[in-house]
Length: 215
Image 1 (cartoon, one colour):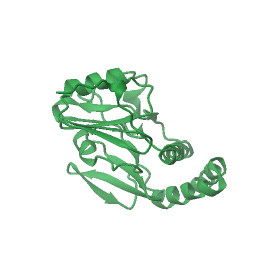
Image 2: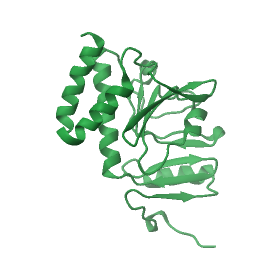
Image 3: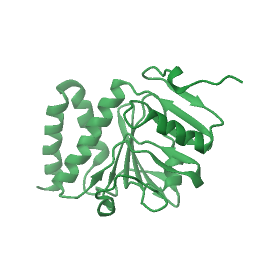
Image 4: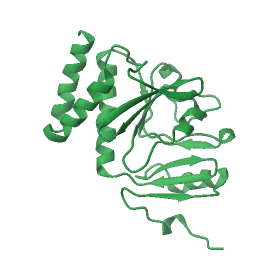
């Protein structure tokens, strides 16, 4: 049997590493050893651990989409708590996931000042964002954790998935922002950012949100 240390493993940008037969305790130990200040993202599903290293393309998309969510919330004057790529995990379900970004909106008041999460007590985030560039989102993990809404950005298009009877169904609209044509807007202005730049795209997006909301 060969034993390797984590510092012996290198995952190049855009690649992923799958480790099988990983116990929950080993997953917890790996999280502790890697710490919070890391570029790699982890996903755990019933004994399989995925370690992926995102590309700049992925990071730029997740940042601008996260900024767009914040703009919508600001313009609609909706309170929120942003938990970024926090690790969400429940041992009894055998899942652990780190979204590209996530927001507490309906349940924001419960999360004010929270520094540690316990999903046996705390609710899951109301909205999770995933950018699928090098790997596909583990939808089963989000279903198990009960995340009500996921936005997945893949190949230049946004897809909204809403939890219904413990399974996700694709939706043309966001229940969180029912008055805003989210798919159209996010897709349009992320594409704009690739040619005009991030800041001009976000400014234009803010004006678009104002128009859509009648403000």
